[in-house]
Amino acid sequence: MAEQNATAGGGMARSLGALGLDRLLILGPRPNPALEISSLVVDSRQVTPGALFAALKGVEADGAAFAGAAIKAGAVGVLTSLEGALRAREALGGWTAPFFIDPAPRARLARLAAAFHGAQPETLVAVTGTNGKTSVATFTHQIWAHLKRPTAYFGTTGIEAAGLPGGDIAEPLARTTPESIDLQALLARLAGLGATHTAMEASSHGLAQHRLDGVRLAGAAFTNLSRDHLDYHADVAEYSAAKLRLFAELTPSGAAAVLNADDPLYPAVAAIAVGRGLRLIPFGRQAGSGEGPEGLALLAQDTDPGGQTLRIGWAGRSHLVRLKLVGRFQGWNALAAAGLAIGAGEAPERVFEALEYLTGVRGRMELAARRANGAGVFVDYAHTPEAVRIALEALRPHAPGRLHVVVGAGGDRDPGKRPLMGAAAAGAADRVIVTDDNPRSEDPSVIRAAVLAGTPPDDPRVTEVGDRVEAILRAVDGLEPGDALMIAGKGHEQGQTIAGVTHPFDDVEQARAAVSALDGDEGQLIEDI
Image 1 (cartoon, one colour):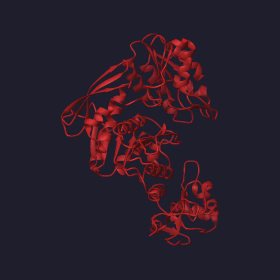
Image 2 (tube, helix red, strand yellow):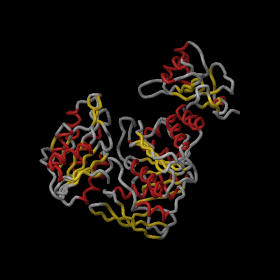
Image 3 (cartoon, rainbow, N blue to C red):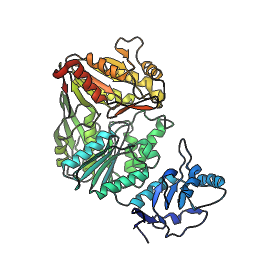
Image 4 (cartoon, one colour):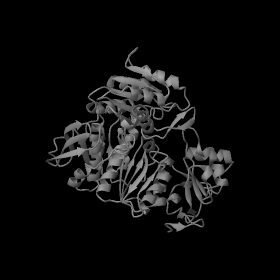
């Protein structure tokens, strides 16, 4: 059986039989099992001769409508559902190529992509949850890098790799969780470059769309769950179910399930993990006393202006760890990363030592600048009501003076959370400036009005400033000694989308520009944290 061969174009190919396509229901002409598939494609415009076209039904487009174009461009077959095949046949007037039928074509495509590309890093872990995914995955990557493992991370902030034979990597990434074909190609590439350990984010979209099916996981982590992405998911229950797929279906028996014991969803996730034979590693204040064989108990947490000190219980011993990370929630993120590293085989003592070397993630409670009077300006990706509340409450111990926030909400997204964003900001901060986030195609003033509707009427602490540059400048100008400002929502993003056009915009750069304009050389611009 042909496992993998070079194609005439210099790429790879797998036989139809090797991919198991000959075992599916086939409508139309039956191909030879030795027929070679040169690529897997979901966009008919990217079809080249020898490709297998996956005709998937999306929210806005039906791939079955493009089956004819794909076949004309050289696709040797079409993977789709029975309904999709019948729709395509009606448009084509007959079976002009083999149609491979699967009731769940997205899941089948993901497994085909895994078989097609083959290689994956030996140790793969995934992180899901509403908040903290990027930090936990990046911290896990940093732990492995400190332990001299050839390691990589990919997710919201892009692709990072360290300790590879060919050197480090830092690249952008279009999606938090890439489409299954792109995901498997990326994993194969990282494995080929020598990465033995990789941490990735698992978004609810990626899980619901089966993008991670076929990924061979050594462990998975759950951070927390709150309202988000209800523009895509019908309700919180559906959103939650998408997250839980990571443990209910994708993480294999014996692999680690690292779960936030302080989240209300913990009992449900833990029951799933135990029922499937996963190695349960809870973390947090409710993870026990640390006396049991497993569990990362947060026994104590003391904050200071430059970070925090954790007392962690594990296997009957107490460990003091100093984190150079601002924000109490970062303690939970560090514990989750430690749990993933331990669950994947690292010695606990070495992992706890590595925690002290963790550095903050771009746009995640990032200290961008300090005013000459010592007031700190932080940038955070908090873009849900719960994330705003948690981030502000986490920053409060580091701000003996007043706590300020610049906040908005994105357009073309869940409108129900907009007043909740305003309520969260007004409930946790001493001064609130409501501004534009990414209005996208919507009227920015309508979005701001919805956010303001969640704040107390005529509250003198709340101000509306539509222009984000002006909002940041006015917020920085209002900082007094002992104060702290959080610029929420956009985090690491490098653009602001208004009326469908993305303009260059970086909250960190704008914060530093504001401090420079107000304080000149006396202000402190933080290049590294």
